[in-house]
Image (cartoon, rainbow, N blue to C red):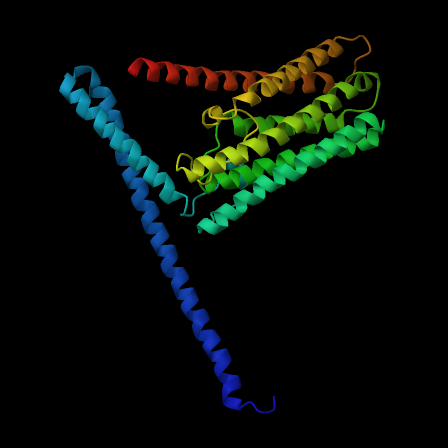
Length: 333
């Protein structure tokens, strides 16, 4: 304390208090602005929805010129909805049912681009690292260890991995990521499946399916690693060209933007999907075995079948839509 005037020691805390007071004031102003913008967007979205509905109802009685005008206005409505989507990504919003159950009424909206990108990159790295770890552990269980304990560790890791993915994806969707539909829902199915596998006791039925399941898990981790590696590069290129949204994510499937450069992944994906069907058929056959007493056999077969149907037909729909688009473009030329 020698050499410092007593006044300077008192001035620093006072400045800090003044800065903190200003900070709280700005926070209150920010909250009011957020509430005002959110209310304004909600009103305008409601008006656009009513306008779209009115256009749909009157299409049957319009002339050719009026239809052209309606199409132009509908295009403007879609553009405006896109703008509102971008704006809402930076505004606090209520959590969905799943996040409310898991986290409660906690605001998970990240208010800066840097924070959003950092969280998205962390999510992608989490998927990559866990995929590699799961590949190593499944290979070890398949070829080195034949113990229900190590299998339980592997299944527990799967449950934790998929639960964490569902939570992180919900947070990313709140912050503007456009992953939706089946590619979100199939992680919930995978969580349920992994939980049932974890509770399956050791026995004849378990041993009959064990090696098949571990081999499938190894292949699935390998394909997921391939997907992450090639999808992340493709997304980076498309974002640079302005053709993809900055918060788009890699997915464990096939989407329309992957058509350019990633069609070589389709055979790997289809083979993995038919492995899911094979697992389901095997489990349904085991459920009819005279010595089968475990409920887990049937409860694992159903999710595998659901995963096959969802993955296969969603991928098929994307491929079909792409071929239709190409045919329309060829006819236009």
